[in-house]
Length: 587
Image 1 (tube, rainbow, N blue to C red):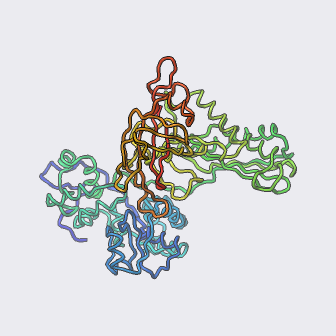
Image 2: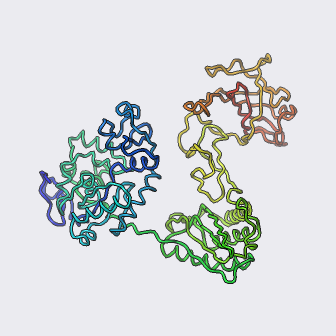
Image 3: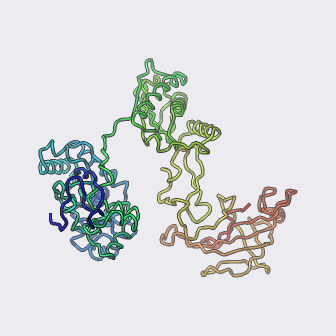
């Protein structure tokens, strides 16, 4: 490895500059072995989609090429290229969607293959594995035998090609794996020095484009030039992220690889002799089993958020149900769910399975509890004040009890989500499911996302207090009685003066505002539509007398102290069929 900077002495990294301005002595970074699978997003996407391996392929996100295969690069496709430009350069290019979950799921088999021949594996990201190099190097007798062993074993077990790199520190080992080289101990700074500062952007999830651009404008185009700056000057002028990048450029890592341990089966079971046919006997057996499960989880520092309950009858019928919980289960909560589930199995018909009650199959002879999904014990720890009170806990237990009788999809709660209209901003989530993401029963393509995200064209606050499931047909009239319609340029054909709802009597308008155009999903020829919103205010007394609308007493915002309805504000929508409809009512 060539480099212009002298190698630092043992236990010290020379930061350059005048004497006395370098960094304090630090322990050298540990030797790290990195195993890298080139173009892993493309490899996983091609295999999942069944695309032939001899066809050029690229993974695209936001109409930009995120990763591409070697065949695609040979025809001019590059990362960051626009999708259409990539297809113009390579007409036979297979364009695949980015899916981080798919990449991680399919990379697990590679991690398991590495664990069969080396211990202490850390999955840095899908496509990259790191482990401390000392153990494998000593066991297999050197760098070359270790590299050959790992590469051949991964290829034989998974059919995936990979490269090995060894250096001091994870950052340098990753760059070495990209080049398929082994950096000698103590030569990491010499290896990094000639590399471009753009290598700092390779770390996923970290945006260093601004820092890299600034360094290039300052004339610091290599990692060696950046590493030569005094650490104190970097910290005072560039910020905390630049300090971390400066450490990486000097061959230092913020931490050694975290060892990945093979997952253990987090499950407990019990044989019931004699078989259980009564709910009270099953509840007694489940209490000790639940305590055993929580003791097992506590020993690993984990808490359960998805509980698997499985039972086997004397006749060999297998019964299974998974309970999802928004908060970590306590032993009491686990016992409750097991008792309720066994109550359903022992005394009721099994809906959808075509089986009668388990008691008629000889009773339950084996019961098994498992942590289907776990988190670290402190990940969802409740705060000291105001998080969940006794009333909330009782309400939650009542909902779970009802859910045990009706099934997991029998109890829903409303969650405010993203969207432009009032109705689409409310999503029903089964009790116990994660409230921040669409449920499994959500319709395909339901990706409304977070309510905090920007939604251009969204109805501004305040939102209607009542959103109608079935919009009520309405007709807006001018003072002369002519219908008010919407032109192609989103303009009203006249000034609104009266409104008729559900064919009732005309109601005079006290005020109106709008219109506000809506161009929903313009890119979709099937579900896209254009319309406009209009807000109107009617007299509450007139609304009741019209017989077309049922307003509760005192619903108006300007009601009298005597309970009069006052004014009522309505949200109207001009739909794709050329008609007005009432979609919401304001308090």
